Every structure is written in structure tokens, then in C-alpha cells.
Image 1 (cartoon, protein in one colour):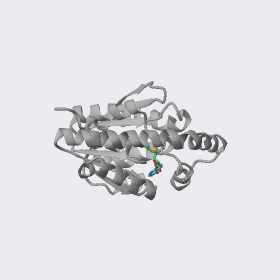
Image 2 (cartoon, rainbow, N blue to C red):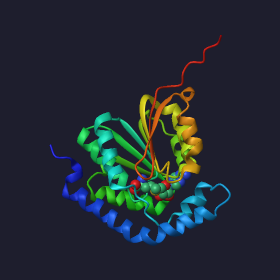
Image 3 (tube, rainbow, N blue to C red):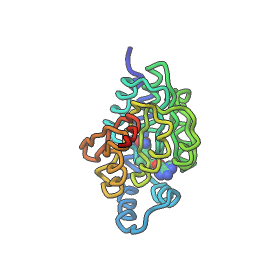
Image 4 (tube, rainbow, N blue to C red):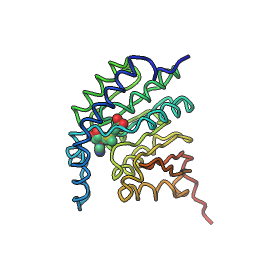
Length: 229
Ligand SMILES: C[S@@+](CC[C@H](N)C(=O)[O-])C[C@H]1O[C@@H](n2cnc3c(N)ncnc32)[C@H](O)[C@@H]1O
């Protein structure tokens, strides 16, 4: 069986997002990086989403293929994605769910226009049955999410990763895969997340992978019982 990733419908949408990202982010990304450089106070989710509203900021193609590979191997029932944008990574995850014949993605973004575009892109790719795009703040959405999560993909904003992880934790299955992007690109913002997830007392086994932007791959083993001596 050929992967859905190589079907013409899926390829057309992914190629379109990638070429739009090259065109738009060429001017948008330097503006955003300058805003980040000048920013001294922590961002609120609304401020951050407004600051990056003009750009795509889709993950690199290799990350898309890594997500496809992980979802095929893990066969998750439920995937939760923080940071939809135009749906580049959501399409890779949804293609893998279709090829698995099981599982559903919930992907969340606070930007209503990007969510609408991601829904259109998933539909054009023929993958809308495998993904629900939710407009909202990620911590709020995951806090009221009920299914157990087998795979948590973090690609929103590194400063919020720890809050999203802590909100998701009560729903993480033992053995859940957690993938966090951009942990080296925005190293200072990612520090609290990395300190938390690399501390075995918090119930994870974790490693950093250097791919130019940095990604942290972890599995949730469950919080160790406290030993009372
Ligand atoms: C790097 S982009 C996501 C890229 C996407 N995963 C892809 O590869 O196509 C980050 C997205 O996270 C969204 N975002 C940032 N903070 C958020 C928050 N607290 N809640 C919901 N969405 C947020 C932004 O609006 C932006 O679209």
C-alpha cells in the first residue's frame, strides 16, 4: 500500500502550503523575530497569536515525515496538536491516521482565520474525517478534552509548552509520545519545559534531538509513587 502522503490530492495541498510559506514567511519571519528580540515581558497567548498572525510558520518537511512515521508506528487512538496554523503538520498526522485505519486528531489554534484555512486544506486533501480543528486557547481546550491522549504534539509557542503539557497530563496514557518542536530555536522560552520533562520525578523519559531547530521527544511513564520512608 502506498502512503496517503504521496497521493496527488495530499501532495498538492502540502506543496501549496510549502510554497505559500516560502513566499509569506520570507518577509513575516524577520518581523516576528525582531518583535521577539525586543520583547522583555512574557507574552499572553492573545499577544503572541496576534504577533505571528501574518505568517505560516509551518514545520519543516522532515518533521512532517517524522510525524507521519511516529503515528504509523504508535497507532494512536487520539492525537492532540498544539498549533495548527494552515494545517501542514495536521495533514501529515491525518494521513497517517487514515493509513492506520484508526485514530483521530484534535488540533487547536487560537487564530480563527488559520483554523478556517486548515479546515479547507484538510478537506482538499481528503483528510477532514480524521481531524477536528478547534479554535481556542490550547490550555483551555486541552483542559476540557476528555479522550485519553496517546500522542501530544507541541508546535504552538515554546513558552506555553509546559502549561499545555501540565493541562494534558491527566489525560496522557502511560506510554504516550510527546513531541515538542523548536526547543533549540527558542531555547530560553523552552527551558522550563525541558527542565520539567527531563526530571524523572515528573514521570517522563526524554531526549533532545538536534535538527537545526531542536525537538524534544519524550514518553510519559506515569508519575512515580512517592516512597514514604
Ligand atoms: C508554529 S505555528 C504551527 C505550525 C503548524 N504546526 C504547522 O506545521 O503547520 C504556531 C501556531 O500556534 C498558534 N498558537 C500560539 N499560541 C497559542 C495558544 N496559546 N493557543 C492556541 N494557539 C496558539 C499560533 O496562532 C500559530 O498558528
